[in-house]
Length: 436
Image (cartoon, rainbow, N blue to C red; front, side):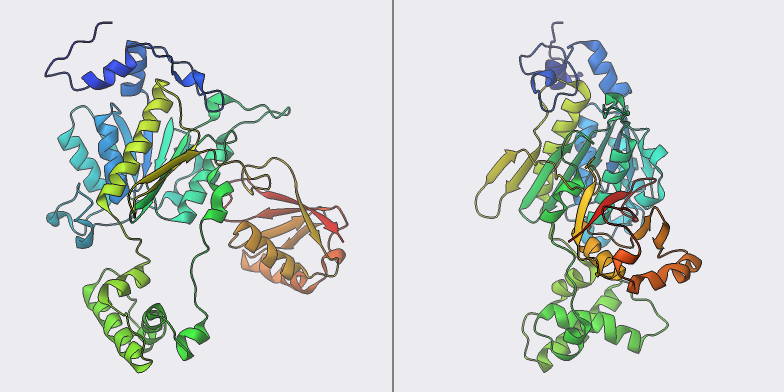
C-alpha cells in the first residue's frame, strides 16, 4: 500500500510501520517472538479496535503512558487508580488542573484524554486494583504498569502468571499469555521491562533488586534518634496519637503535616540532628519517591513502544529489561533479566528447604517470610493445616504448632504448601523439607 502524507491523517507515521514489510519483524527475535508481522490494514485494525489495554496508575508515569497510548493508535484503554488529585501533583501530572484537586485521578485522566484525542475511549476504574479479580485482568490483551508500589506490582504479576494455562506436559497455551510491561521511575533513574508470564522472568524474579521497606525499631525512634527521619517518624507515630487520639492523621492535610514537621523539628533540635525540612517530612510520612517529569516521559515512551510492538508484531520485542540512568549524564543498558530458579510465583520446580529437624515451625515461617518476602503465610502439609493466620478460629486452633519442632509436624522430604496474600487465587508455594 502506498502511504501518502495528508494533513488530516493522524497516524501517518504509525502507518509507515504497519503497512510496510520489515526484516526485523517480531518473529525474528527467537527469545521474545510473540507472532509474525503481517503488514497491512488488518494489523492496523487490530491495534485500533481489538488491542484492549489496561494501564495501572494515573500518576506521573501513568499520565504519560495514557497520552502516549492515545497518540499511538490504541483506542480501547482502561485505567485503574485509587488516588485523588493533590495540588502537589500538578507540576508533573499534566492531565490535571487546579480545579481537579480532590477528584479521582482515574476519572479525570480518562475525561481529559477523551476530550483531547478523537475516537479514543478511556474507561476509568477508581478503586484498589487488588479488589479486581482475575476475570477482570483476563479481559485485556496487554497490561502496562506505571505504579510505584511494589506490593501492587507483585499482585498483578501473580494474577497474570496464574492466568497462563499449562498442560500436563508443561506446554504453555500462548493464547493465555497477557504481556505485562512494567515501568518505574525514581528521580533521574528509570526502568522498563517486558514480562511474558511463564516465558520470561516475572516481576517476582527481580524482587531482590528492591530493598525491603525501611523500618526503624521503635526503641531507636523513641530513645536514641540519629537521623532526621527518626524524628519525623517519632512525631507521626508516637506524638500524633498521643495528642490527637480521636483523629486519624491525614497525610494530604497541610495542617496535619505542618504540625508533624514542627514537632519533628523540635525533637531534632533537642538531639542536635540537622536536616529536618517540611519536604522531607512529607517524603517520610507519605513515602514519596522523587519524580522528574522528563524521566517519566522517557520511560513511558519505552513502555508504549513495547506495547505497540507486542500488539502489532511490527518489530522485535525488547529482551527484556532496560535501565535508564540520568543522574550524571545519560547511560542506558538493555539486558536479559533471567528467571529465578526458585521464584515463588513462576518457578515450576518444587522448592527445597534444608533445615535442622529441631527448628520450630514459627522459626521456619519467619525464614520463609524473609526469603520469599511473604506477609501472612499459611502453612499446610499432607497431615492438614499446620498454621493459619486467619480466620481467628483457625488461628487459635493452629497457633500452638508455632512452638513445635518441624520434625514433629512433617516427615523428611515432606511437602509444605504455603499460601499468602501475595499469591493470587489458587497459587501457592510448594516447599520440600529436607532435614540436615
